[in-house]
Length: 152
Image 1 (tube, rainbow, N blue to C red):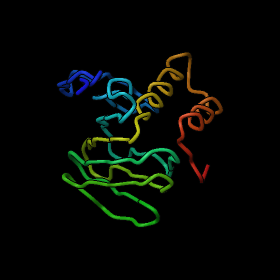
Image 2: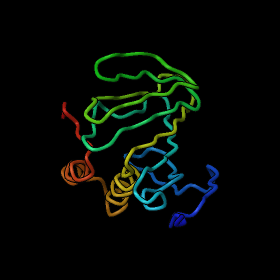
Image 3: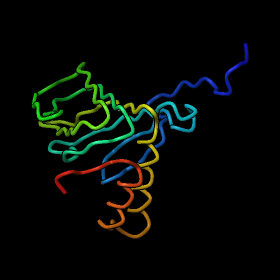
């Protein structure tokens, strides 16, 4: 049996790589690179009222696990209020969105299969750090990293 070229990791939330795409507080717990492309895992914090508009991915499945707080979620047109312990499975091609509707910070874990969301969020974060947010460049990066906003 050939040993895996991947190395085991133990990553605490504090060890995660901080990124701030779209002004959000995120930490990359497992990068696409560290998983050999298999997945990426991110913990994201959302202040009250924060969350992305409806969007979809054509090349990734996404799993979201609500760690704390209350979110209003919309997956493929079905809307629901969910709290800690809830798992969302979002197959590729499924339009989805979520928003923290609570009065405190909410947190979620986000997995994509295969990986890639971490590199997208790093690219958006770098765009803002390079002298301000440019909507046209952000749109181009979103398309490059397979994040599509059908209502935009």
